[in-house]
Every structure is written in structure tokens, then in C-alpha cells.
Length: 252
Ligand code: PXP
Image (cartoon, rainbow, N blue to C red; front, side, top):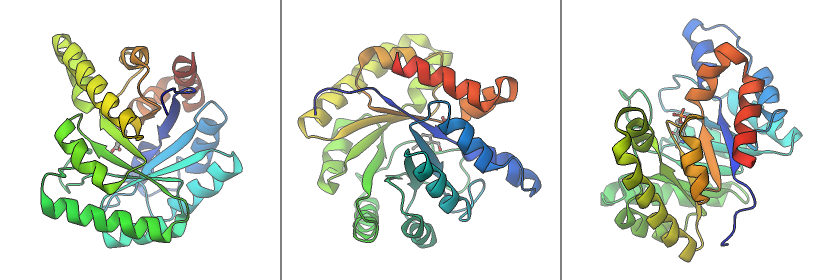
């Protein structure tokens, strides 16, 4: 596992449902959004079923499963460790689960899992075991900071992939470009370790078309999960054209 065919684009459609939930209407329609993403280059659909159900609802999960299957594309479900969320995951049978930390008051996922805390590690280990035993063939990804100590602990859970938290890199890109190089160095270090341990390397959080080329140039990430920027940009250009342009940038 040393070469990457081409990186996958995972489109996170959470914020289509943020808009829907804001009014309790049945629009914007996620089926329509899913089809436009999948017909315009999305390799995967990513959703986060949060414990507080602020955007994606349980009933959305089987819809994402069915439509991604119809298009022969991947379904990646992000989740924390709440029991009812795990039950829904089991029922909708995603291809990938990405385990993330969750805090009720946060605006969005604020960072990677704190696996150095043994109680967090135990809870996640339990969750991973349940998901693996109940979802046939599911692959597990863990959302982590680019920190070797944490990644060494994560390896004990035998994840198929680590999704590196790119949120701080993305922020520094917009605010203090001097820090970019040090983030890129950290990503490279972590990637080297992951390759040596046969673990796939994914990226996600806060990414936009502006900063993506810096990551693509390194050719270390096999998958990019991007949501907020795509949905925001769609207000002006429509979701299909935004996904198409991003997919072309990624696969060039
Ligand atoms: N990856 C993970 C693990 C996430 O939690 C999120 C946000 O739900 C994303 C990617 C997408 O982040 P953004 O919406 O900032 O592009």
C-alpha cells in the first residue's frame, strides 16, 4: 500500500440538512443533493449522525445507503459512541464508519479523538468491536490530530484508516500562512508512520478549494472529506458544479 490511485472526494452533505432542520420543512431534498453530488464526481458521501441530531436525522441514513449503492459509491458514516447512534449505524450498514469525538456545545467537531485518555480509548474500542461484529465488512477510520503518540495508541484498535484533522491547518491557511509548512511537515511524518503500518491516510475538516492544492501536492492523502465549504459555495454556483470542479482538482 505505497501508491495512491487517485484521491477520493467524500462530500459531506450535513449542511443540506442543517438548512432543512432550521425550518422543519422537507426541503432542501437530500435525495436531490445526493444525486447531484454522485453524478458530478463525488466518490463517497459522508454524513455525521450527531447525538443531538442537529442536522442529519436517523431517517436520512438509509436514504444515503440506498442512493450511494445505486451509484456504486461509498457511504461513510461519522459517529461518536452514543448507543442509539450505533444502532442506526448497524441498521444502515455503511461502507466506512469514522469515529469522531463529540461535544454538545461545539459548532462542529473541534479536533481529533483523545485516545490518551484511557476511558475514551476503552469506549472507542468497545464501539469499534460492536460495529465490526454487527456490520459486515465495515471499515473503520479514526479522526485524529496529526500526532504520532496518539496514532501509535490508535494502532492498537487496528483501524483501516486514520482521518487526519485538517481544521487547524485550514484555519492557519486563512489567518497565519507562516504556520502552513509546519502542519504539512506533521502530515508527512504521520503519513510515513501510517504507510509503514499499512493504514490508509484520509483528511478532513475545514478544507476549501484554495488550500486543497497544498495537500494534493504532497500526494499522501487517499481521501478528502469536505462539507461546509461545498454547501456554502453551492449557494452561488449550485452543488453539482461545485462538486464537479473540486473533483477535477482532486483527480487532475
Ligand atoms: N471529517 C470529519 C471527521 C468531520 O467531523 C467533518 C465535519 O462534520 C468533516 C470531515 C467535514 O468538515 P467540513 O464541513 O469543515 O468540510
